[in-house]
Image (cartoon, rainbow, N blue to C red):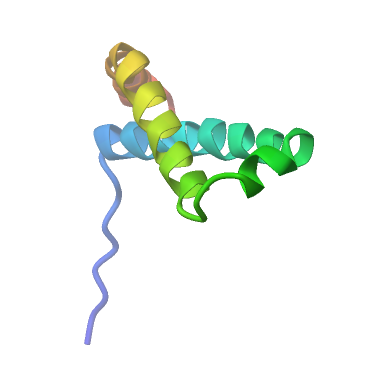
Length: 80
């Protein structure tokens, strides 16, 4: 049985990197709240941190979406 090696396209690599950054920003913001405002998080439902993380990630994704086209072009021209 042969295993086919599938290389990601520049678009896939750029989108994955973009998502990684969106996740990183949202996770860091939530970590900041947990460290500096633990009482605030205790006062909200247990689902609030996940909801907040998803909201932040969504906002970052929508506000920085124009950068994705630049990242894709960089991935196309960047040497492997």
